[in-house]
Amino acid sequence: MDIENVWDKIIKNEGEQYITKTGLPFTYTINGNFVIPDRTGYPLSKGEFIKALDYLPMDGPGKISKIVRGSAYVWAILHDNKG
Image (tube, rainbow, N blue to C red; front, side):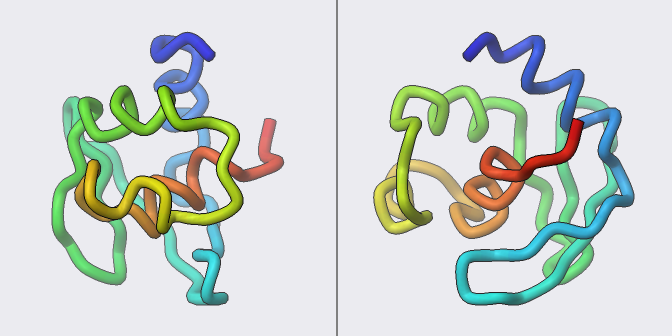
C-alpha cells in the first residue's frame, strides 16, 4: 500500500464512523497531517499510519500496539471497507 493513496482515503472519509476491534464506534477529524479521533482528542500523525503499513495485513491492533500510538484507531481506519 502506498501512503499517499491511504492518506487520501483517510482524508476523504473524515467524519465517517469506524469501529475498533473491541466494538467502540468513533469518528475523526483531520488537522494537517494528523487524525484526531473523537473518543480521545489525541492527535495521531501520518507517521503512525506509515509505520503501521509495514505490518499489514493484521488481525487486530495488538500487532502494532508497541509500535504506533492509538493502535486501535490506526488499525480500524486501515481495515475499513469504505471507498
